[in-house]
Image 1 (cartoon, rainbow, N blue to C red):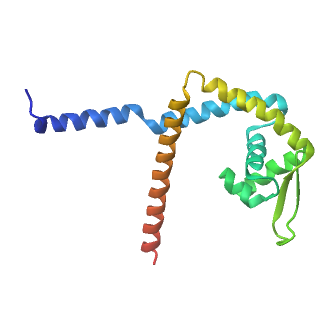
Image 2 (cartoon, rainbow, N blue to C red):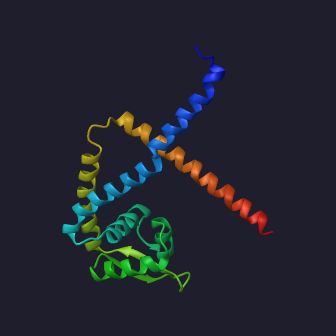
Image 3 (cartoon, rainbow, N blue to C red):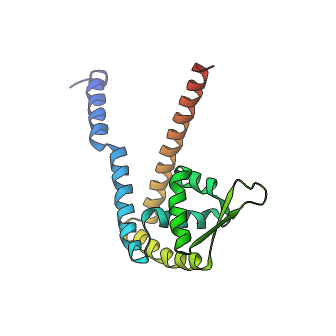
Length: 172
């Protein structure tokens, strides 16, 4: 029988192999794409593409009357990418933009009554997608999954912050 000390390299090798097989980042990426595709398919009949419905949904979650820059940052996209989507949403009558009273360079985005009505329709469909995709998962399992995802996100942000600090020290 092997001692624990001599088993250590074998244990480490097996653990590394398990981590390679799992490829957690790939699974999470695939899950995100699948979820998005299912949600997109549900919302297409409403005349909304992914960029449009996510912009509306994020605007609702941020609270109405936010700057285009704040909305772009919340969506994690560049402002020029958001501009096309906002133009389309404005043409559909779901949002309106106006100059900020405090800073004339900034534009404020707000929902129109039609936009609020569209969000009500979207919410039902998004909740149905969520319910269907989470079928068979207990609330306890879901809470644990969300906890783990938050921990991984926090670790990633800490790593990015550390790398940014190191880059800044190199350039000083």
